[in-house]
Image (cartoon, rainbow over all chains, first blue to last red; front, side, top):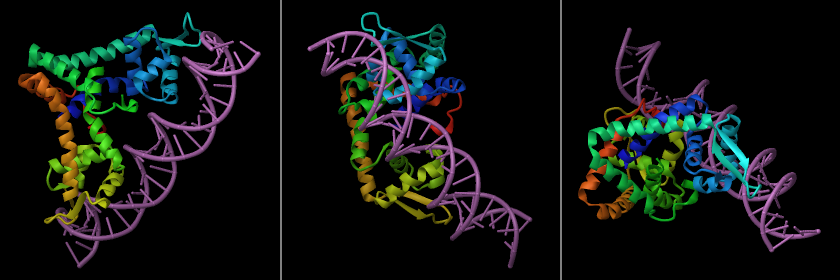
Length: 140
Length: 140
DNA sequence: ATAAAAACGTCAATATGCCTGACCTAAAAA
DNA sequence: TTTTTAGGTCAGGCATATTGACGTTTTTAT
């Protein structure tokens, strides 16, 4: 339990530090991550992924837009929807954060060998896919 | 990144649910866990492990004591220190929570096989032990 | 013996983060 | 034309964490 906890903390420590220097936090990273992973994401879809209320998303998302990291544009077919995308700067930041996490993980992977990594990934996958109960939207 | 995150969430979901039914939360679990793992732990040592201010610990710890799950007694040699221990009920709860997590993990382990589990554990260990920067006490 | 420090507990003020409820606009659907 | 839907925002409330400041008891230093 403790090791698992610390592993996750260590995994996000470097990005957290970089984000903090820009006045951003874990939420902002999650937003950037989902937008990067799901092109042309609508606000509603983002809310589902994050599992927070729209009021909770409002502030950090607005900050990202005001900082020019995220762009929000009305959808083609349905102008009520706002499609989110990363700006150039947003992509750059997201890549930087992602690369930090990859670097951290790879330093370990290099020592552990290929099959260990594959196992680690698939166990995580299995753990994540088998929620003991309902994943309670608020904590996804 | 996302899988790792969800794996950890799933790992704590069941305990969180059980704690919530008693009006407790993640912090309480962490306190119970550390007390269980370190017999005759002093308050100061607990604070170091948790990496929070003593004011932040005060409330949840007091609740646990008032609920009769944790006992606090002056140390033999140094009566300024308060040594923490689980009561019978506290041990029972801690074991229940621990067992839930083990059960969750073992359902997955059963499918993945022995070596995969060993790899998963050692990769986590390695990730946890290699903080990219300083682990920033506040998030340990 | 007296002063200083350590370990713990607590009160207060402050900041954050998230939630629910309520209200508003613009656009799509009925 | 009326009703929904998608999104944005304000207000109030709750929970939690932080720093700062005291007060108590016990131990250590002078």
